[in-house]
Image 1 (tube, rainbow, N blue to C red):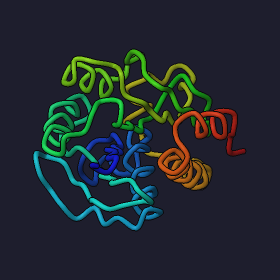
Image 2: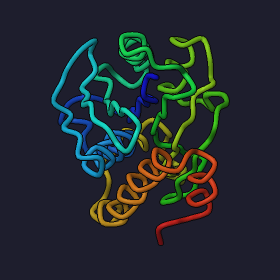
Image 3: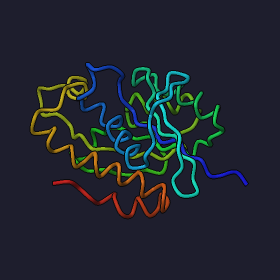
Length: 194
């Protein structure tokens, strides 16, 4: 019997110019998850940086698509097809404007909610049937527009604030792998880093 296999993908924009932006919290969270799983993200295929390893009885592939956020879908589709991973066993980690800053929430499936990365993935897989872990970055106060907000760098205060949030997201991912999505949803969807 083949081992259960999961693709855990964090969304972001590649390159140093975007490294500390709000839009890249998915990249940071997946790096934390990789560290917790002791998986080195040292492989590159189909414009995806990834690493492979095991956690318990499961095979885990932890990945970052290396195309821009709004083109995340095609590289992830190619890597999922290559490893034979079903859509329902792909966890996408991404920023979310509509969740309070510092809160994380799992979602079993759904629409894209205006998130360009999720929209690209839904188009590539012809489905929204993949779980997500959403990391709240909050909405900007006027007159700051949404694009400037998500692509803006964290302030020094936000950097300090989001360190524990990224840690919590990494812990949430390993909980989902170890104990399943319903347990992880129950444990983390109401938690918030203050």
